[in-house]
Structures are given as structure tokens and as C-alpha cells.
Length: 254
Image 1 (tube, helix red, strand yellow):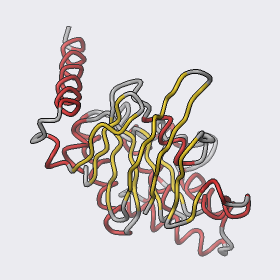
Image 2 (cartoon, one colour):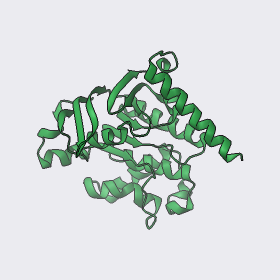
Image 3 (cartoon, rainbow, N blue to C red):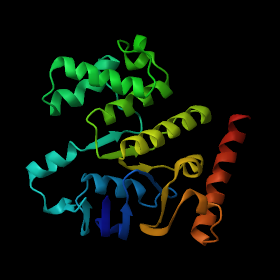
């Protein structure tokens, strides 16, 4: 479990996070949602330890991030997997090499063991063997995202973080990626935290949903409760998200 208590973060005089309390549980897809400027990106980076926070604490199964030594933080990072918004694959490397990279840095596996683990992860995200020796540029956006997920889970992490995993994908491919993340989370019992603005993701895989508004936790619940809630912050978010989506579709059809 990841526990966040009283989290506050400012940049100069701008207060971005204003005292957030939330628990993210293992075996669940925990979604962080909110409109632009709500603080969700800073919140995710703070949990990852990329931002030093002003007040509050972040703990991973009882281990408080701010009280760890550098050696302990390094060990914690080996328990984390990260799916970046743009996949962040290296175009100069093959698909196999991209997925093997964390093993080269952090594992003591033999070359044969690494190859077996890479094959397992690529097979798990449904990448065909004939694509293993290709470069990312030779794959579609959806396949690149699958490879990014394979790389994120290759070290068998306890915690999986995803930053806008559906960004730039068509709706059908986005659903496939959502389902894949959900399957892997439940299969391996990971604590998965997803930063997203996609209402489809919320309604499809939101085991636990946290809505941020102006740096505060405005609402918390499950995907089943989102559309049933009469909370003004939830109603406003759902309405504006769907409205923006309709506007984008209309503009594409002009």
C-alpha cells in the first residue's frame, strides 16, 4: 500500500498541493483524475520522489520516503515500474533491448535468464516474437505502449505508475491498453497508480478513483460511484470532460 498524508507542495508563492490524504491499495488500479491545473501531475511526481514536498509524508508499505537513506531509496525504485506518457522507448535499440534495459541495470540475472524474462513480459503484453528485433519506430503507437508496459513490469515491481497511458491513442487501442493494465495489476497484485484525464479509463478500470481540484482531494470512490455521485466536483468534472471530448470530435469532423 502507498499512503499519502497531509501532502503539500508549493513552487515559490504558488501552492499546488494543499494537504492531500489518500491510500492506494495493492491489487487495484488507483486513478488520479482532475482538470488541467488540478495538481495531479505534481502529485504523481511527488509520490515518485521526483519533487521534494514541503509538508506531509509518503510511505510505501510503512517505509516513509522522506526518512530513507539514498541506498534505501535506490532499493525502493527497483520495486517501481513506470509507463511514461510518450512510452519513452529508445529508438536506437530493439524492442528486446528496450525491455531488457532495467534488468541490465538492476538484476544479477544471467543473459539466458534475462532473455527468458524479456520474452515472458513481451508475450504477456501480446507482442508477437517477430517484433522483438524491430525498433520502436517500426511499431504502431499502441504496440509501443505495450512494449513500455512490458519494460515497466520486467523487474516484477510492487508498484506500477502510469502517466496518461492512453495519450495519443485511438479510442479502440486505448481500451485495449486499459484492459491490459487492469489485467496485469490484478494478476501480479501490484499497487497501480494511473494519472489520467480519460473518462473511459475511469469507468472501465477505476477500482479506486481520486479526484483532485485546486490541489485538494475533492472526491474519492469507485468507478461504479462516479456516475451515481451528486457531488458537485464530480458532476462538474464528468460534464466538462465529456464536453471537451465532444468538442474535439466535432473539430476533427470539420
